[in-house]
Length: 437
Image 1 (spheres, one colour):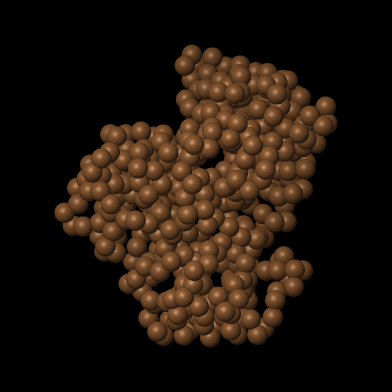
Image 2 (cartoon, helix red, strand yellow; image 1 turned 30 degrees about the horizontal axis):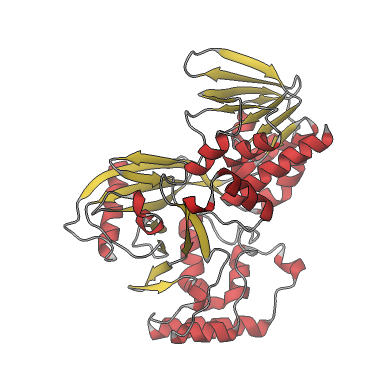
């Protein structure tokens, strides 16, 4: 028997590509994992921003077989950075025009020095810390004014302890010409891996996992896995509705629960896996969603906030993705605040500080009325790419596969990924299982 734990995108994709020959156990009452949306008082709130990029032909074909293209808005990114009292377009390194002249000069000088030092050899980049990679790629000015403060705020970690593998693939070094044009306000190019994306016209991002779940028979909602026995190759779960406890054998187990959770509830795992789990690090996120009784609070999609005066590192605007996300005459904003694991927090405090920060930067007005709010605590949210993870992860995942456990997805494989990556990994996991049967 094949068992899939978790009806997020990775788990659903794995079950779908297994051809329906799997039981899917999902703790929640709905599919999607983090790829969920909540409807409240006429507003649609996602669990933070979820944007769909379809670069792989096989994943594009899968998504459009579930939802026709007319269900989506195709959107060209309007992302900004708020620093030094102004909004500048994203990415920072090629859009310094409008910043104080001394900041622009520092960024230009630092970038030129980095270029003069030469390209980073691949063998050196592989083991570089994020701090060293940023300095070598963008120079001291860009690192000082954006890369360091923003990422310290998000990761709550010494950037010298983090590797650069989570980001180096997505952030190519621009040319000196690009950086100079950006400093003069002449840049018209789109940079980065996400200059355009798809987002549902209505219903929020949840319509994607819901459409995929409709194609997967045998999803059991309210089924919380409480024990995995790797020796006997069994899974035990509790049904929320009845309290009934069931145990079933597996030939292959696809686990998309966090690796740390898998270890905590398992017996008989190879020793490499608990040793890895003890070293895994992450940051949690409080996602504050506010419904505002005023239309058009921002014509941007999202904004990065590197400066410490703002409690959040990012804010986004759902009505810019879909007009159907808000009632007529209203707007909404989602806010992301990083926390350390187990850090105490107060919803009232974070909502009040977030509102004050949005007023300070001019997105909200003092008299704006908040008509509804929804707050999510996500833990883990972002996995930390440190050297322990790099050294131990691949051997631990391989050891799990030897006992029939395929730990997959953002938290199952403990990596930074997109929705498309999740769908692709589920597919690849299923094909691997089928190929070994």
